[in-house]
Image 1 (cartoon, rainbow, N blue to C red):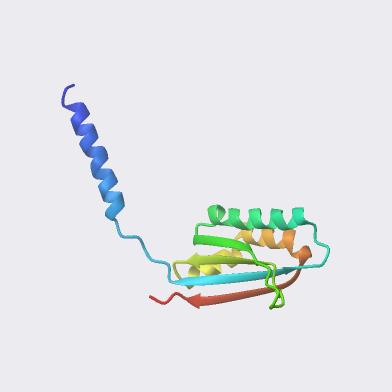
Image 2: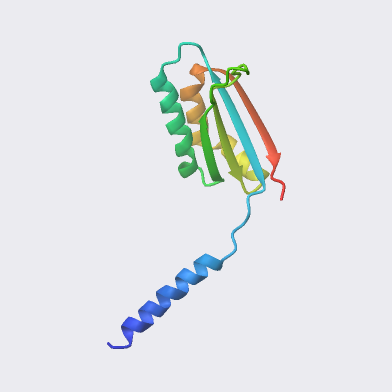
Length: 127
C-alpha cells in the first residue's frame, strides 16, 4: 500500500508531461465570415446569432479555433458588415466538413432570414 501512492503520483505526472509535449496537428486554413444584418434586426437576434455561431466550435470537431465579434464603429469608414467570425481548420477537408455539417446547415437556416449580406473568405495560414 505504501508504494501505490508514489506510483500513482508518478503515473499522473507522466501523463501530464506527455500531454504537454505531444505535438498537435497545426491548423493550416482559416475562414473569415462577415455578416451584415438587415435593418431593424432586433438586438436579441444578433446576440442569439453570436452565441449560436460560437457554439458551433463545440458541436463541429473540424473547427479547431474560433473567435468572433461585432464590428467597431468607425466614423470614417462605412460599415459594410456588423459581425465577423474567424474559424480555423486543420485542412481544406475540415472546411468541407463544416459546410456540410447538420449543425452548420441548421444554424444557417435559423439565422439567415436576418442577414442582408454575407462574405466568406478562405485562406491558407502563412507560417
